[in-house]
Image (tube, rainbow over all chains, first blue to last red; front, side):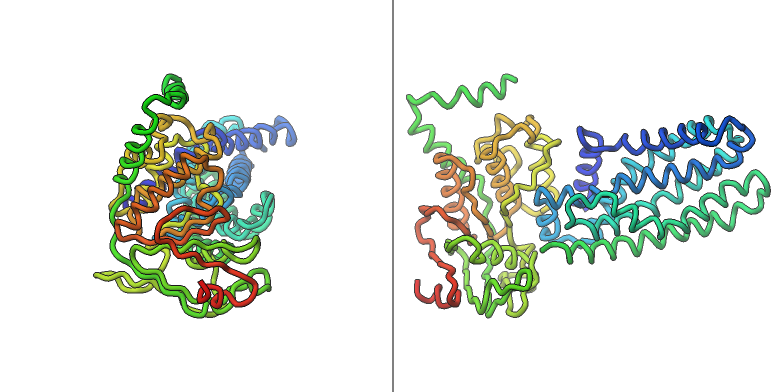
Length: 222
Length: 248
């Protein structure tokens, strides 16, 4: 257990230090959300109606863009060989790395979302529901993205390939996340079903993601 | 800053160099943890890389206290053999097994081995001691303390420095310190002396000797002649590798 705690602490430390990129996700999120009103125009009604969708797309892109280095950095400096050979189950290593990555990059998005929602003139109940769906849904994006990061680990500059591979699989997360967030404004009873489905997608990704990632990492060691 | 300066200022002190040197080598030896006995057996190993046969029908036995020095020209498969032994390459055919006397089942090879590859597995954003402390916790089990291991490779003065500022030789020494913080019976070393200066090389040979004396064993792939008493040279050559071992 202490081995995984040590891994978690190291991943967090690396994320917040120079070149770690923990804040990059939030900054990218901020830029996407800021640029959107310029494209759409200063129509407050329209902005507040599509606000949850804008926040979700921003969070989706910010999460996926930061994932390409998840295993590539370890492979480049040789740490991946040692992590595989240390004798711990590789699936657990993947889970710990994903959780640490989510804590460093996903959680700040969830925390920042309510503030960014103010830019979009969203009503308070929509801000609350969007934050809740982001909290439940972003782990799914991290675990799904981990599969892409594992598959592209042996490709140099595989950077943009991860979002391209993973975005189609992230569509259910987007659908349930946005529909739960917007339901609150029009029909409060409609929140429950998509929210529970979103939670289900997250749990499924947390199971499938580590197994698939570990398999692809083992295959990519050569 | 003072720490870095101290590390440099120690060098020109030649007066008591000999005794200081011997003393540091002895202390280095003490940092090597004793290991449980383990026997490595390789039978009929065949490994392909990129569709090309690199190793064919290789047999190898390595008991406690034994060392093998792998030599041979570039591309003959020294690194491939070491990576295959560590389980990073899947062999086409053949068997690799480790017998550990005691409660452990014979089987998984990697958890009984340390692998020192071409790359040093250091995170440049972490300090020297943070790097080593991570591997100590992650690899687990008994082993030398972080400070003792750093002292054994003469990096204790730099322990608070980010690894980004280390020279190639210092990075290598930090990677070598990893072998000490977790006790594992078999060391698989791929070009361990790369980038090391003469004094560091001598210190490494001292550590290897102490590891062998403590019941460990090692396989080192190298171009340089490592002066390790009792080491068995194995030369890989293009005609069957197993024949090469029989000839030595």
